[in-house]
Image (cartoon, rainbow, N blue to C red; front, side, top):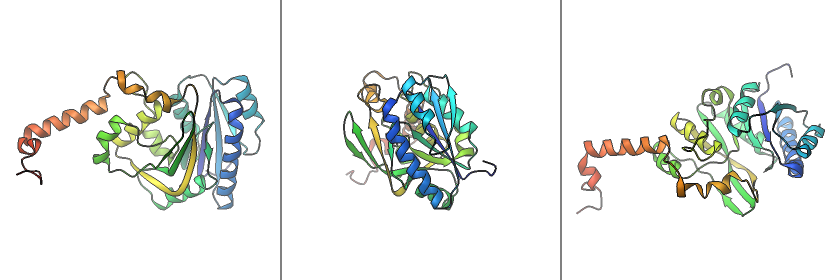
Amino acid sequence: MSAKPDLSVIVTFHREGLLAHPTLVSIDRAIKRATRDGYTCEVIFTLDRPDDLTREIVGRWQAVGARAMKLDFGDLGRVRNAAINDACGKFVAIMDGDDLYMSNWLSSGLAMALAHPGRFAWRPELVLSFGRFASIWRPSEIDITAGALKLAAVNLWPACCIIGRELALSIPYPAIDNKNPFEDWAWNIALQEAGVMMRIVPGAGYAYRVKRQGSLLANSSNWPSGRVPTRFFRRLLEERIARDKLHPALASGANAPHAK
């Protein structure tokens, strides 16, 4: 592709096997709709230590004209960083190889991103989880300050995201250690700390597959029982303690509206 595309669609694959096929079908439909709406897209498939079946299914998929990146990281964050670095689009769409996407996700998300320039990350309005368990999740636009403590305790936004490529390059996915639960949550914290505002794409959604085994979302539900507080969480507590020392009356609730 000679001209710089509007959007780089980044899809990560690992060991999805047959589950990759319906994902590819849904992505193909989303790309075709975006193209009909006048947007240009490039497609990048990352294959990080894939099994043979996943490699075969992705390798045979010609409909979206994707190029493949064969990687050996064993680390989702490093995979996403490598793909963003390799991308050419003005914006990047972060997607996973076993989820199902509404056909309007890329077109509607890109339209919102282009219409509202700035430090924003765009998320779908609705997330339907299925597989190991089922739920409906509505990500919200939470103020950076008000949402900070909540984000320290629970992941507020899904992995699915459209964001400016240069902005994403400036805030890479952090390395994972015992102070971060998983890559996408850690990145959401990094975005929050960098002042990136989360915004919702009205009418867009996708279906998140919760695997029977190995799901990051499912595994994270057990994380709080033995976790080490993140640096982000500790910093928030330290700032709160410092404010309370400077304003003890507010800390005690003396000036609260309900105080007598």
